[in-house]
Image 1 (spheres, rainbow, N blue to C red):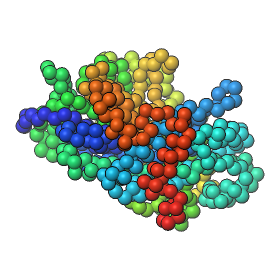
Image 2 (cartoon, helix red, strand yellow):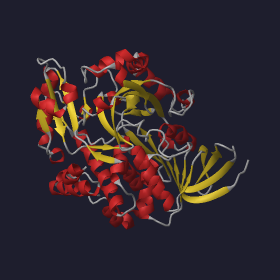
Image 3 (tube, one colour):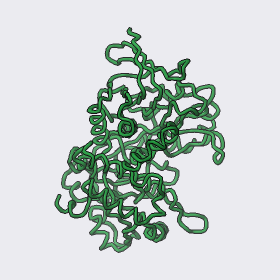
Image 4 (cartoon, rainbow, N blue to C red):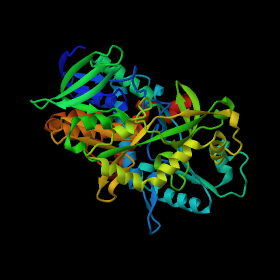
Length: 500
């Protein structure tokens, strides 16, 4: 066992989309900082960022019905959709900067143009969708949204979904052609490769076993080589815990007061993947439906065209499930191990509050393939069992904490940054919309943890993200400009689209 000690400026834990994004941003802001990445697995982006584990793939709030709610007076609240869309625009600007600066190449390897659609059935939901469309389409962020409840029009938009459907059924859809499909696994690998070219040390098969504060205020990490078992100690002035489901246990080990009274609730997922190229060829969109009553937001059913390894795929799901693991490659003791004296009451309260959710998740795990096919047939009436295979998705760990609104042990659906008061350590917890908003989340970390540098960094931040510091909604001309420039940089503009 070696106890070799090394000092560095920044340590990033986990080689997923979050660490890759933060590392890339910091390298642009301060090229001479020494940055190291430690990843437990053998390659980057293997857990939640991986394209086969990640459902999100371009959350721009164009089609996700759970981001828009009907208020008691019947009006539609689209504030969450606005927020998520603005965050996605920030990601698009940063990726465009990377492409335009020749820091990454071939954007079509990670992003493709693809229509985003919402689809509902039944008179009440059709009325809701129409109202939602009227509210959203008048907003400059969602300009160009189309609505139709005409079966002939819908046959043009979604032939596979409309085939063999009863003609008397109330059905409607909205469509946004400016949507995209994003392969976050591919993007993560590109960014990590770029960081290696910039002399960032990326260490695979290195597990962070402990984190503690040193007397001079730095952080000392005890890091174990997974293959040899040897242990090294690395110290850093700033540590980012971006280990997906593995972040909570490491945050707890840091001992910072901000990490207390927080728990995690793991939710697993399954997808169905179409193995019949003839069926895959008939669908070209992301189509989101409405979640069933009692279902968690991340199990909104959707039928997605995906581009993986430059090949078109078709996925349906996700079916939620329950496993006590915090990572797909984690341990069955993760959930029990995360219960500490400071969060036990928060966790117990969450357990009592979410009995129906837990029951729902366990029922979902028990579903037979035929039962899952029945859900798929609500989207594709003539779907055949032999055309579809099951795929286990990544683990998501939802944050549990005490909140003023929800009381003790409230389950949070979203991503959350937890940082020390002095900004020396930050962790990212939670799930959806996750990867799609990575750049905004990392900006939040930069602002929280490096306030003393912000004035000096501002010109560079504005170069990387032209809308930095500006509310897009108040600047419709800027929205249009960003849409045009990012589509051009990322190869999404109509001229380029038709050339493909």
